[in-house]
Amino acid sequence: MTSTLGFAILAVLARGERTGYDIAQAMRRPVAYFWTARHSQIHTELQKLLAEGLVAYETQAGPGPQDKKIYRLTGAGTAALREWVTEPPRERPERDELVLKTYTAWLAEPEALRRLFADQLARHEARLADYEREEELFGGPPPVGDPRFGNYATLRCGLGYERHRADWCRWMLAQLSASL
Amino acid sequence: MTSTLGFAILAVLARGERTGYDIAQAMRRPVAYFWTARHSQIHTELQKLLAEGLVAYETQAGPGPQDKKIYRLTGAGTAALREWVTEPPRERPERDELVLKTYTAWLAEPEALRRLFADQLARHEARLADYEREEELFGGPPPVGDPRFGNYATLRCGLGYERHRADWCRWMLAQLSASL
DNA sequence: TGAGACTATGTCAGAAGTGACATAGTTGCC
DNA sequence: GGCAACTATGTCACTTCTGACATAGTCTCA
Image 1 (cartoon, rainbow over the protein chains, first blue to last red):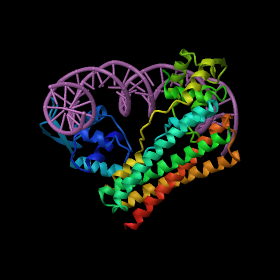
Image 2 (cartoon, rainbow over the protein chains, first blue to last red):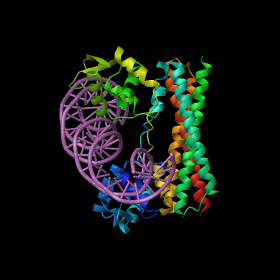
Image 3 (cartoon, chains in turn yellow, orange, brown, blue):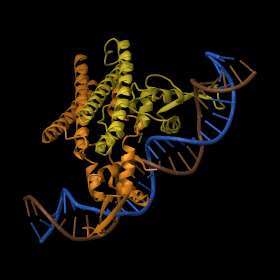
Image 4 (cartoon, rainbow over the protein chains, first blue to last red):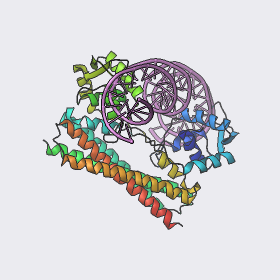
């Protein structure tokens, strides 16, 4: 049984050959920020996927003491990925520390709370600006059969999320200043 | 060092005395669905909080073989919680399986994909209807110093999130039917 | 020429989280 | 009268994830 992290790696490799390092980079930045993992976890998971025959690699001289390993999907890997895509996702519970803090807002000092939300709002607005710049580069949705459709659709989701979050922060700030 | 789960428990106990079972119930359902945990984890964490002196309990005859334990915050627990509330939250990476699947949508069979998103949309709409009913019960935001403000503010966040998600699912369905 | 960032691999201890097992009284429904 | 669901506690093996440690060549800028 492949874990969700395993499928996340397969999903990245489906776009083309990559080293473990490349995969870690791809999962670190916010576009298609759908699943994250540290390189330590990725190397471990790649070894499992290798043992299951879902990926294979070729070596090349690398900068460090070890050789560079360039991974690619095998036929079995592509098949497993294709089957997984349309299975309903497990309901992942939200674990959102900011919302948890909000739940206890009544205990907090109002000015410190204001700073907290102003800071969060700034982060969301910055990320939103980033995403909007990226969306312009697309100039509209790619066809559904194109790998780039996946990138665009996840970017759309990110845009919607950041807008919802920024709105909520603004609402919180309005509540806080109304109560002074 | 108290974990975020620890603070989630403290946040629930700040509303009033509760058993471990009650806390597990409170963290299971979607309003203030900010953090979840199984009862096995909650019992373990309560023992840690007890050792740190952040909670205390009194026993009462219970239904099972063990006595019922009614937990409450200690002074130190309230102080720790109050301090934590306004500290900036750790950036929790998103781990969203549906978005991950979307990233690989180009590999999927279009009809199966349509079913997946139609199903997800229905779930979000059902939850939205739930939340809207709850919002009506409030009839506007409680004052910021009231514990119920926390409930209302997290509900607002949930409403915004479900709307954003439902919108995104509808957009996906539109893309899929346009491509047939 | 030297410092710091980047590429690239990997291990390991420990924390956090899951799902199953175990126990047992009460309550509501058919 | 019996069955299922609910209340209520807890343990345990296992998986997943994190953060630190370890190694070492290249590239860029001052």
